[in-house]
Length: 211
Image 1 (cartoon, rainbow, N blue to C red):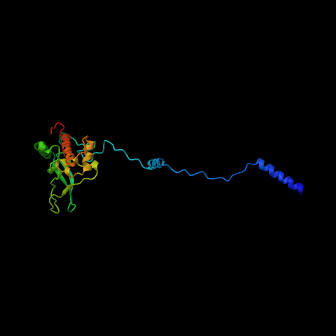
Image 2 (cartoon, one colour):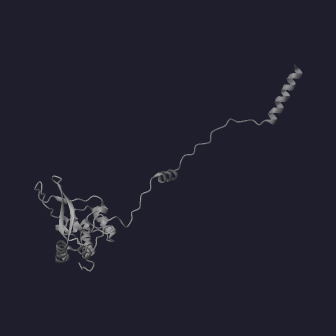
Image 3 (cartoon, rainbow, N blue to C red):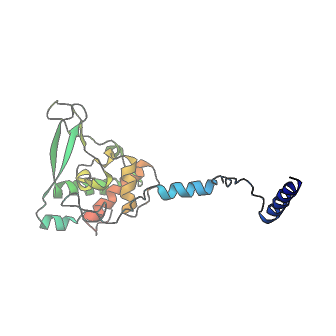
C-alpha cells in the first residue's frame, strides 16, 4: 500500500506540471454605448427625407412646371384662358363654389391699384390687401365669408388669389414659400411679403411691367 500511495502521489505531481490550471471562463465586459454612437445609430435608422425638386406637376393650367410661377398674360390669352377660376368656401356654413375672374380686367385693376398707391405703400401691403373683402355666401347670405381654399403650398392657386386680391388670406408660411421660390426676401413682416407677392406675380404676368 505504501508503494501504491507513493506511485499515486508521483502521478498527481506529474499531471499538475503537464496540465495548466484552468480558470473559470468569465464573460467579456459589456461596453456602454457612447452618446455619439447612439446618435449615429438613430440617424442611420431614420428614413431619409426626400429632397424637394425645383419642378412640379402644374396644379392648374395657368401654372408652370416651376413652383410659384405662372405663364405670362400674353401666353394665357393666346391659349384661350380669358377667365381664371378657383374654389372658395364659406367660413360660416362651409358651402363651396367655384369663382371665376376675368383675367385681363382683374389684372388691369391690380396694376392700376399699384400704380396709384405705390408711393404711399412703401413696399408694404395696404389694409385692403392685408384684410381683403371676401365674396358673399350664396347659401347662407353671410357677407365677407367666402375664403379661398388653400391646402398644400405647392398647389396654391396664386393667379386666382392675385386677380381676386385675396393674397392676404395666405398664412405667413405660404408667403415665405412663394418668396423662397421666386428669389425674394422672406424674412420681413407679413405686409412686406404680401406686397412682394403681388408685385412679383404682376411681373410674371407682364415681364416688362414697371411697378
